[in-house]
Image (cartoon, rainbow over all chains, first blue to last red; front, side, top):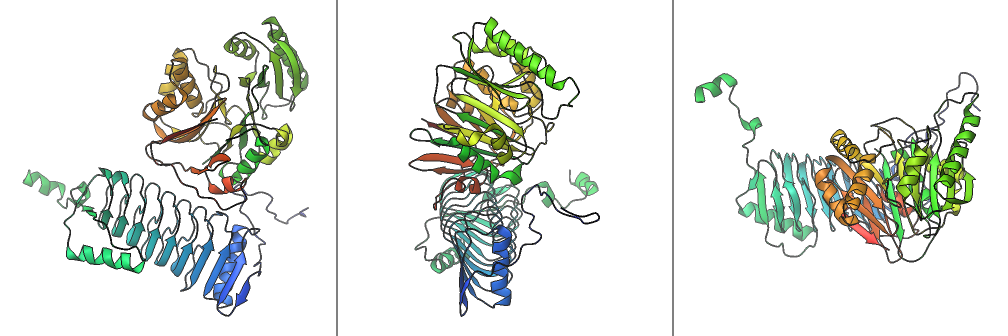
Length: 262
Length: 309
């Protein structure tokens, strides 16, 4: 029981409050490599263990067994390192990372790599909606399918999807590249500002202000290079889509000037 | 936010009450206000009716317990008046009850006659379906209603973060598709043409027990089924008729289906195995009942998927 004047957290709606969580320190460490089993650990304990290994034990290569689709794993890792998740991640995994090379052996939930700054993330399975939302740099490779709104607000980097993508892919994209080898749902590149989207399959419908772009040697060079890096073989024939820049926000005329034009 | 879940076993019955509790408890963070279950046991010759005579939040005045006793006697009397023979009678909580009875007539007549008693709400009525819902998380509701021992073939469940209506039992999911027996719905999202459909369905003679927009889906499906649509057709038509963002799971005595709106703005993760199909707002819910590595995926926009037993 809490005594008078003592504050105590009794309930947290998200079920995530772990104010007293300590680093589990359960990893097997061998030189610059470490491995630990996350099956019985909470999200906070897993992330504390990762940080302890990477920042305090100077480990460079961590393998996490049984992540069990827990949410928010590996978020905010800001150092060059190698992470391997043997299994699946839940929502919001690997957000805000800057530098790591990550391999996820299973699938990931919504919003993986949100705001990723740099590094490489390779996902063997499917990914949920909002994959790579607002990423600013690095490469994100999904070998399965992705959900809706992949690369929403993308500001840089490259997203590669070997399967199909859902609706509103590249919604409000600002910069960077996206390569989708499968089909894409309706609203591709809706309201995009800039950036390039390559699609190998069928496009259900283009979004507002998304138009076919002219293929150049630079496009071929980029796609071939990325396919080479990730061992994806020869790239298939792709369609290119860019911003048409016809939306109202590209109209630079003042109201008085517009009157004169009209 | 809310969390929804469903499970259907491909062969036979299993501890579906326990499985659904595990799924829902793992998504407690998506909605701590209330938890609800629609559980399907083996089809019986008896009609099973679950009902409440007060809400969990109702003020307890001196008359409260006596009023509920009177109301429950009235429920049983009205069933007898309609020719039903009560076989089992259980009081689950001070305000929630379960009756099993023999009855060959129209179930709508029963529901209407019983709900005419003040504060009485029929949660479910059918030969397989049992809806249980109350305030609190899954473990507390399962404990209160002793759901761990419930054996069945399929189930859906819901954890609620109330946004469109009050935190009470009538606002909790699942919703029974009155007056269709054995049909229920759980929903994650918001319907923006709620009033339009509510007025339209009320004019068609349907009753609403809550101010929750999700109830529309259950009643909408009931209307479509009454007009001859199949379960899957009704769900497909809902994609055009319902406006807003939604992912919902609907169930009948022998099928479970999911529908996702064209924005695909509400999550759903799906696992199809040899032994069962499980789906939930978050993968951790599916993993709560499967202790092995699994391959899951998210259905796309405007998808309707139905699994038949």
